[in-house]
Image (cartoon, rainbow, N blue to C red; front, side, top):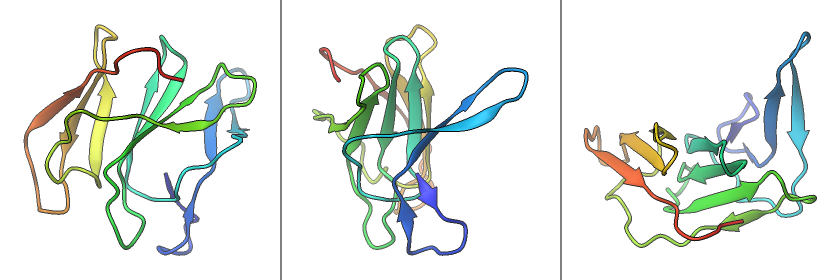
Length: 130
């Protein structure tokens, strides 16, 4: 999630990964459906499921409270909304997250629009999400 480096009102919706090797290069992942452009969201890669999750962020006017996922194994990757049963209070922008060490979910920490917040949350994806 981010912007084009020139404007804080134009948020991009493209997805890229860094292909490592002798000459590392950025490769765009073409998705058949995009998500709403935003900045300052938390992106988490799930290596076991080859999925990329995007939590929250800011679209410049609002702070969406949502979680989206794209399955990179799909022949035509597509962003899907992930239903949430619990939503952390005021955590959508400037939030950090990483995979849990045992691969069972994600751990998030950070600040929301209400100021600095020091609590830690754990997201445990349920079912088979695509």
